[in-house]
Each structure stands twice: as C-alpha cells, then as structure tokens.
Image 1 (cartoon, helix red, strand yellow):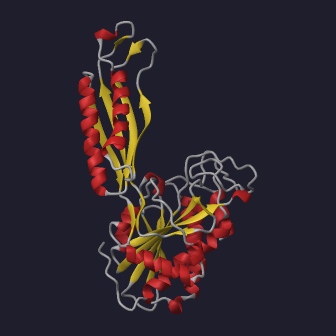
Image 2 (cartoon, rainbow, N blue to C red):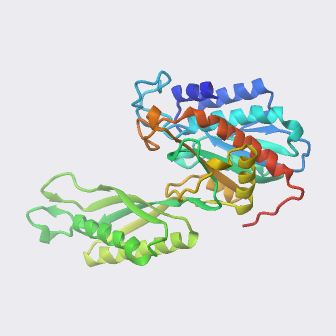
Length: 383
C-alpha cells in the first residue's frame, strides 16, 4: 500500500482528468482478479462476490488531486506534475481501498455478501457520485462506508461517531449594482462598494445574532471584486462566499436570512442586489446502526483503544450523496505525526500523511464488510 500511495502521489491528476490513476487502479484490480466496470469517464465500480448474492454493501474512495504546487522537496515521491498535488489524502484513500480488496479476496469464506468497491473521480469539484450511484442502484446495496485520512487527528486515531460528521455547504454569489461615477463626485452616482461593505458586515452579524451559539454555522465571503481605477466608483461589485451548517433546517433559515439581509441592506444604500446559490452539498451524517457496525469492526481489529471523539468538520464532502440514498458511515483516521512533519492542514503545499496508518484504513474497510454481513437479520436503516 505504501508503494501504491507513493506512486499515486507522484502522479497526481486533477478532477475529471484522472486517466492514469484510473488505469493504474484497473491494473491492480486485474492483478488481484477482481472484475470491474468503468462508470463515467474514469470512475470504477469493482465487485467482490461473497457467499450471498442477495446482499451487498459499497466501499468508497476518491482519487482526484488539487491544483496546488507541492512544497515537499525532501520527498522522493513528491508530485512530478507542476501545480498539481495530492494535498487531501486521496492517494492514500485509493491505496487503502486496494489494500482492502486484497484482504477481502483472501477472506471470501467470511464474506456473506457482495462488496462493491467504488473509486470516485472528481470529488474535489463536487462530482463523480452520480455515475457510481446509477450503477449501485442495479444491485441490492444496503450500506456504504467511506474513510478520510485526517490531518487534525493524531496518527492512528479513529473517529466513527454517529450523527453529523461534515457540514452541508453551498456557494453564494452576489452582484451589487450601483451607478458608476468619477471618484471626485460620489453624489452623482450610487456607490456599490459602500453597499457591499455594509452587506458583508451585516451578514456577519447573522451568525452571531440569529443562531444558537452552540449551533455549527459558518458564513464566509472569500472574494470581493469591483472597480479598476482608484478614482472611479464602479457600477457593480461581485462577492462570492460559502455557507455551511449541519442541519437542513438551519441551512434553509440561513439562506432566507441572507436574502433578507442582502436585499434590505442594498435597498438602504440605493443599490440593487442579485443573489445566486449553487453547488449545494448535503451534510455527511452517520447512521447510528452503521456506526455501530464500524465500531464492532474496530473492536475485532483490536483497535478499540484508538477510537476517539472528534468535532463535526465544517468542510463539506460529497460522500453525502451516497448517504442520501443508503445508510452508511464516514470514518476519519488520523495522520498527524510531528516526528515526520505530517502536521500541515489539508490543501496545504506541505501536506503529508503518516503512511503507517494505511493498513488501518484497509483493515477497517474490509472488516466493516465482514461485520456487516455477520448480522443475523438485515437491519433496516431508514434514518
């Protein structure tokens, strides 16, 4: 697994361009003797048949990299592609799922059901799930498990609590329309910059004044663009940001509150606001029964002492698309290790992982499959 992870790390590919990565995964599956099909352009769903064909679960790993220039000159296997880097651990995810494939093939006598291995393209741009879900819909899939290597957790620690684990997310785009004029005569125009400043400040108060302080909510504006000259008031300003929460009702309230605040503030400054929401991702919420299966798997592996509680992550992940269709669980496995300078956050040019944890992820994928099918009766998960 270590060698595979390093190979994927050295040859990263951006979302929707994972040609080499997909081909290499298929080479490994061929070598193991596992049949598969392509879904979409580069996604893969492989099948390990157990003793009962009427039951199935899915295991998922994402494979795409990020548009980041790697800054790890000490690594022999650092990215060989300019401005592209595995800075989120997806190289490790693929290596772990391939490791699990080998374990499961050797343990098929314990596998009382079929396992679908799902290698997803384009997670970083919120895509890649639809084609996999279409394929899974053709089979009696009961549950899905995903794993994310996590830089904020101490190496080897595992978090698999039930309930919300990652936030829902949505993009916000605002356009504030005014009337352009010479900077010497602001009274002759309508200043969208002043209006935008007020909008941003008023929206910041939404989170602090309209939500319970213990409720996980985040509203962030990360880009403001307006004007080209220091002595000209522009006719419009563009603003973009994101909103995040862990419950649908909170997301709905935040959206309506944002519309109200933006519109009323724009009106107060005689401007006009356009508001667009896009790219919605649901919260990743672990099913209690599936979390219990994962905990049993961890116990069977002798890793119970490494289970830990971890706060809900306010970043988003489109593994949530699977959980809207199937009950399942999403585990975090810690990769933070100061001794090897694996301390940098995800999406950082110096991001790296402690590769010693790869076996834990592979073992958890495999043991979850075995434990799930050990259930004497099918559990119905409709939560």
